Length: 173
Image 1 (cartoon, rainbow, N blue to C red):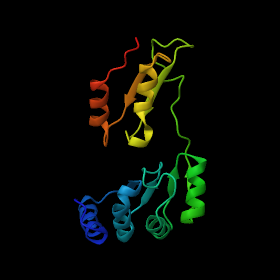
Image 2 (cartoon, helix red, strand yellow; image 1 turned 135 degrees about the horizontal axis):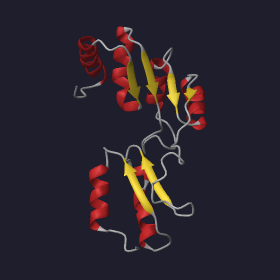
Image 3 (tube, rainbow, N blue to C red; image 1 turned 120 degrees about the vertical axis):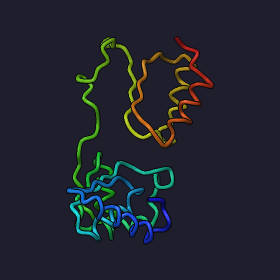
């Protein structure tokens, strides 16, 4: 449902969840906080995942969000991909989060054409500005190295990234 403030959105998401009757609700990052609250309100089985922060919380978490996480994540299994996030969850939210190792099995997913000394850059995940693909593009454009690059991602910034690369393709081979 469209966002219309925390309580109205939580109510709309609770109505939606009630109609869906899910066996398990998986929520992801701050953007799902109302859904998390709705699932808790309905007593649905729930797992929450945090994988990092947007630019507004990268250096320091917002106090109101920390308070909400501390309140809403109580009694909810939380999964994080790094020890740093695990520590933030413990220290700032009072949550004993599970660390699930993040990464890609490089041997299993090695591109067929890749030689052992060839540089292959891959990115899997949300294309957010803090990932800074423009810097990678600039390094390739300056000829500092040549890469094979693969991106498996989507919103929110896919169109802006595709547009950026289309407007200024790297000049290196």
